[in-house]
Image 1 (tube, rainbow, N blue to C red):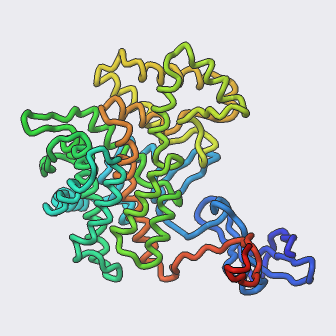
Image 2: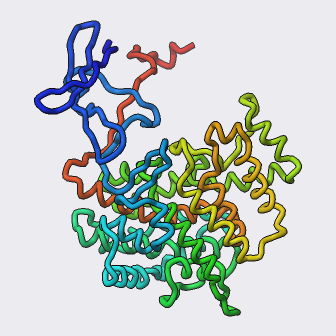
Image 3: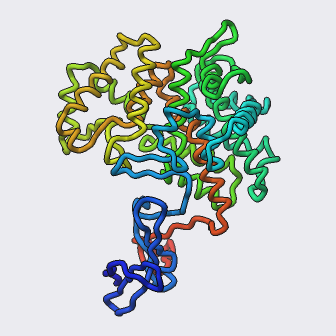
Length: 443
């Protein structure tokens, strides 16, 4: 059994590690790869061919599934960058449309490029009229994410001219269509769930304004989007645009590796995002606040959160990747308080409870020592609640924002000449081969 790995060494000018099988004495040299930033990577692609062994890594938490130039995360230092730009700079100085262009093309746009890109997205926001019949096929109480999965997957049935993944032009048209139509699809999912008429997009509004308009406007009266709310919405979209190789992004890449059309791949990503451990975390924050109930019970629930034997967990604090402060949370915290002030939210018990929980947790030595700071889900849940979104729409908004990241990652994978269909291996623990027993002899 292979049970020893040597320290890195130089081999013909390249660093390698040597894997030794103590039972046979055989060795295998594996190259070490170094990216622009982050930890070095041991290239195990030749491992099975040369040794007969696979690696075992449930959840792929120690495995690099691809190389990518889109997003970089350093969880220990609290760093998130898109194409080399810090998320704090993008959220504070840019717009979601600029970030979309950056993720898709690798550089921030010039004024002309931004204008052309915004126009392209604006004029792709309408849905094929026959698609409205799809919504009416769902029950009124359907979860909006269920509608999203179905409608996005159905896009390939309506837009045949952008499903050929071998054609760069069709790939870009499909990418633009998904970014443009996702707010319309999401808003219509909400309208259908509450029994209101669909509201069509307007070309005189920007991306965030248009989504808020389609979601909250009604035909019988004029609706004006509040600037502070639109800014916060745009910032939420930026902060959720991409987050490296998470579960949903990996799902999109795996689906795309088979050659599936882009609409099907994004629908698969939406389905993965729906899970409460991924995109449903901000919804879980609001559920937790309802469970706590009142400010005077905060100490009791914080004590429960510290008790390893208690199943209660403080949702919206800490992060799987970030072992420091979530850089997105710092940005959203500012927007949170700005939106609450603009909306005049001063006496909402749930929001008051959230702010008090934030204050106490940030002063508690236990949470500070363990770096369990409020994350992006904590603040986004509070903001979306204040804006008037029901919790069932929280993950929908996440999917809307993440679409550009999924599309950029899918594009990058398709354009990689070395990409192959994904085929993870396994450690089989079932029964070994055994003889078939006729039914008459099975007792």
